[in-house]
Amino acid sequence: MEVVAGDMIGYVNRLEAEINKLPQAECPVWHHFAPGLYARQMFIRAGTVLTGAVHKSEHLCIVSGDIDVTTDEGVRRITALQLIIKSKPGAKRAGCTYRDTFWTTVHATDETDLEKLAMELFESTNQQLLGGSENVQLLNNRLEG
Image (cartoon, rainbow, N blue to C red; front, top):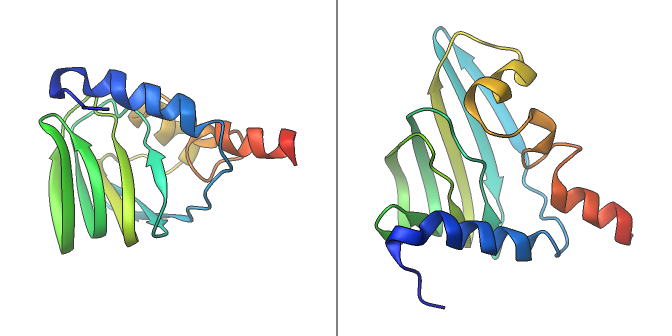
């Protein structure tokens, strides 16, 4: 399927609908705080196809690994020890890893409560995000298993 940059969100949503039918990938998540900053770091194993949450505000993504990722311009291969990307509000990304990859988003906020952070930063609750107990893929695994 050819991906047209102008329909990237539509592509990601269609991909996500298919991914939700598959077994859930285990992607450990760590939370880091500093005055005025919140960083959400995720470890993604090689061979994982995933989608992210819609972000409500501009933020930074720090990527280390080897991953194809959707951008506003199309699909981009990132093979870097470390790369920093600026992400706009409304961004929703999909990715496919070729090597183990760390993906960290950095947000300007004073909030430290994870539930409140999710409401402030994402169009998902904390429990619906990857690693959360209400993640759609994880729920599908429980129903099938």
